[in-house]
Length: 188
Image 1: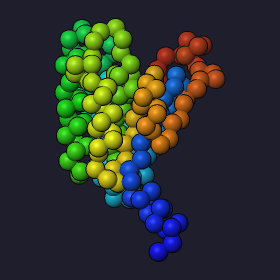
Image 2: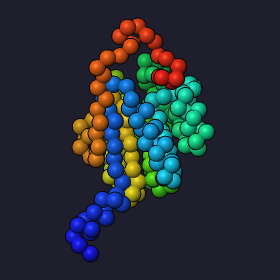
Image 3: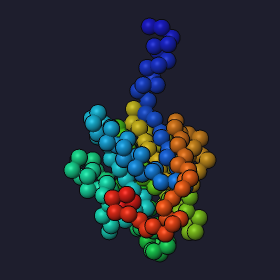
Image 4: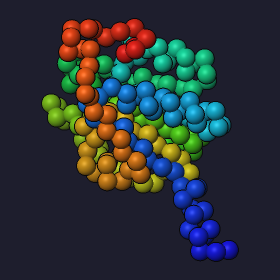
């Protein structure tokens, strides 16, 4: 076998870490698109949301249920609507579930939606319930061939450093600036 074939084989078998971050729209939408593509190829994707609450219904959840792609909204919702302790408990549950799903090896694609937002929380302590070093080690030690997608604003430099792909969503113009509220079918 040539050196080229030997060196390319591990690249095809290794899992990739994709990060969608930035202040613009489209991070979760991009991750869902990857999950749909992965489902089409039999990769058994799962989506775990760290901030969005199961108390709300999202359009993407409705269609993903129809497609057989599990989406688990495990957050407490907007950080300003719940107490820090409610958020800490939700983050602890979401991280324990995410680690279990990653290490189970059942999913060739795991989307950790809004984990970047969660890791960037500075208004209350989270390192004991969502430890950055544990997240980084879990990314590094995941099953071979498993792909991870991490979304959310404020991706930390250490997360960006271990990613294979980083896409920053940058807003140029947004209808919110004109007073248009969240639109059914576009935002939720």
